[in-house]
Structures are given as structure tokens and as C-alpha cells.
Amino acid sequence: MNEEELREGYRLAVKELIRYGFRITTMESCTSGYIASLITDTEGASEIFKGAFVTYSNEAKILCGVPEKIIREYSVYSEETAKAMADACRNAFSADIGIGITGTFGNQDPCNTEASVPGQVWFAVSFKDRTETCFKELPEEH
Image (tube, rainbow, N blue to C red; front, side, top):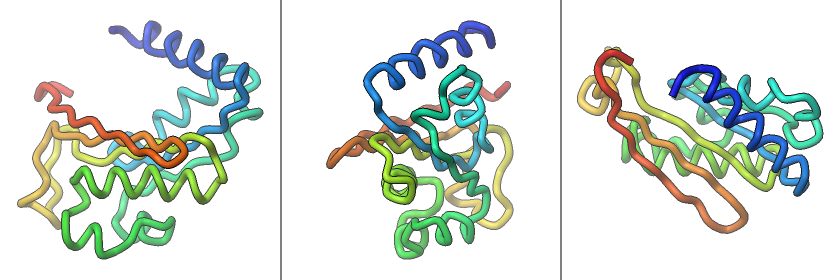
């Protein structure tokens, strides 16, 4: 999938969110706000997107509602942290959908080398009382 196809997919998804009135937010770490940017590229996105968090550091995640205990127990690069990120941003913005993304694309975190495996990323989507996760291992060139 190329960049334009990706952007078109987001445009279509955002239009559907607008149509149904579902509010969405994100808490992004390794994507550094890229998902929020893709969402807000669509005209009218302000109807359903009230804000997001870019929480590159552990401290920022904790300040935005991720329990420190989860990061300490499971690491910042974990399914549990992605779920907590999705839940925390959804709650903070009273949104219907929260997206949490954590991992590392191509570099190893010098502060957390055991859990930091380049190319491993956790995604979580929180909707109502349910949070689903997805793990992806990306090719080294990403």
C-alpha cells in the first residue's frame, strides 16, 4: 500500500465516523502523531476528533492516564500498555473509540533494551467496554 492509498483509506474511515457520529482519539508513541494527522486530513474531522496524545516517553504516558504499574510490570512495549493507552485516551476525551500504539520501528531504546525489539509494534482499539489488540512485526526497512 502506498501513501496515497493509505490516506484514502483514512479519508473513507473518517467519513464513516462522521456519518455515524463516533468520536475517536489516539495515544501514539512510536507513530508520533501520524495516525492523528491522517485522521485530521479529512474535511469535517473536527466533528469526531477532539484531540490526541503523543506520548513518546513513559512519563508522558503516565501523565495521560496509563498506570505506571502496567509499564513497570509489562514494559512500555507490550500488549497491556497498548490497551491502557487506548483506554486512557478514550476516557480522557470521552470518545467512543480510542487507539493506542506502542513499539519501536527501527531503533532499540537504550533505556529499555530487553523489551525494545526493532520492528515490533502493538496496536489497541478501545470501543465501549471492549479493547482489541494486534501485534505486528514490521520488516527491517521500516
